[in-house]
Image (cartoon, rainbow, N blue to C red; front, side, top):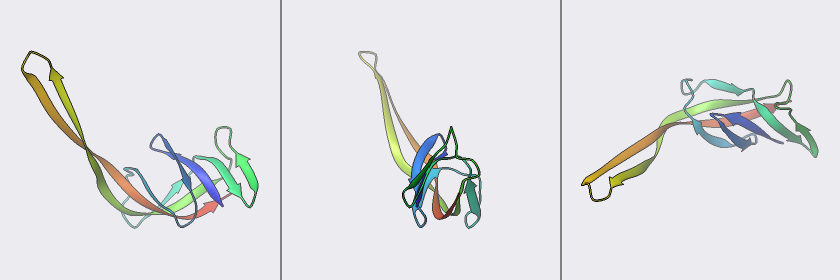
Length: 103
């Protein structure tokens, strides 16, 4: 059994027991989280495709931790002007362990 969910503007394929890294969720570590935007679900050869979401379907998980992603470095420069600038950014992320898929 697996499902495709949408969170943080991205889509993820999840199954029970998976650990997932998503955009930062405003839920404390150790608390349960429910993803209601289920776009697709597969259960033992039977497929359910949402239009745009599957009705009455949800994915339940637990927030494991909050962390910062890898650093992305950006370099700006204008030629012949002596201007250059280095910028770094680390995105806030959340690690979620999927416990069950409800259809």
